Length: 400
Image (cartoon, rainbow, N blue to C red; front, side, top):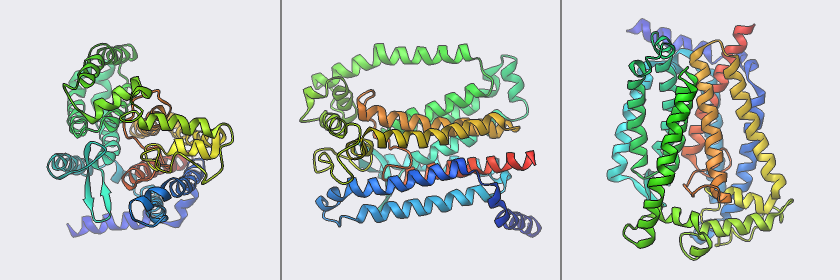
């Protein structure tokens, strides 16, 4: 036992060598740092009025976000320098999975309710959201399970369910626990991650998209109309259903559930091409709820204009494309699936956030990567990015 522990400590010590910094992928690191910088500025700009209204100082959210960014950067470097076999460890993944199951069950009992979802544990001045960690753990869990010895052969031979039932079932348990909080946005993101990772493992594209189209059709044709009618009639009073009603007719519910979306439209309209100037947003002054989290891109659009929003999207696009490129070039199937899972995570989360802001999708309370205020989201994102930097370094060393 002592020899094993000594060996592991020596591996970690050797891994944390400064020489490894030469393996950093700056196409990932630099856009990430710029996005975090923009995020800190926009959190301060969008939250100062909110903080004062809550009886705090105008810079309270600024200090918290700076702390989140600094801790996130430490997480990135830690995951980058961690020995690769720690990231692939089945024991570590199993332990994290069990912790998350117990945490998500615990939320149903003692979770703090924010915006209609009991998805947070309160720890002093901070709130922790376990659903964010689920995204990272399931990416690693699915990638490891789908690259075990017999799984690829079973998938290619058409015996998909023989190897896939276990990871799909384990994923469904976590997704279900997140959904019933209810946290619909995170549940959709996690489902998308699982779907893309499964698809990337070699399962039939035609069958996969057939299943996806069938699920989407049932939701659109059956579940959505029924939920809408029940909400409008008052038979079921639900915060989430109210958001669906607002999505269909925001101006008809402008003084209630449609307030966020209507004021988001006003912010987008005010901003135009170049914006009204940093700090000059009107909608953040009590008109638009959650201006520093869910709707920070609406405030960004109002203050920095379309140019500012496009700049942010390009920076995030560079990160996503670089992650996909690393996955394509990887010689390790585990690394490839992790890259595709993280790219899906970043892309789908950004799409759902922006979709809610512009009215393409119902509002789900999803933050924008690296820009919105929030520690749990930042830590999950930086964990994922650090893992990708680690994978990128591995591939660079293989190529010499």
